Length: 134
Image 1: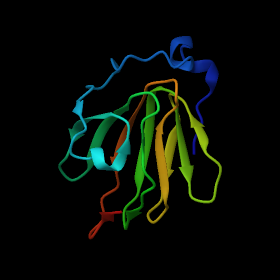
Image 2: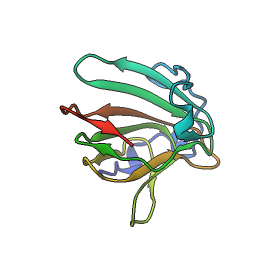
Image 3: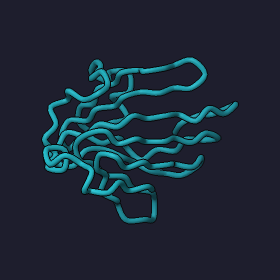
């Protein structure tokens, strides 16, 4: 995981002051994938041809359940708020604006908002033939 220097982050973002009005569209309530989250998330597809790129916004305390991207990986670009990322068997890592997480294929993981902060990231699905999620 790449951690951005805290000195470059505006104070309001460090404090988790985020109302969903970020640099990318907030999106609609994430009904299609609601069964894979605890809490409410919002999804805005930024690109879906050849390379899926989406802005995902989490209400405070919202996170996705443990999951695996088979044959394909994922890159998370943290844009706002405070969140968490954890791989199975490892401690959870705090996420802040500017952090980049590269999730290799086959890694069981979860990510989401801190209990007291909204959180947003741009998710990039790395394309691969026969890719599935569980």
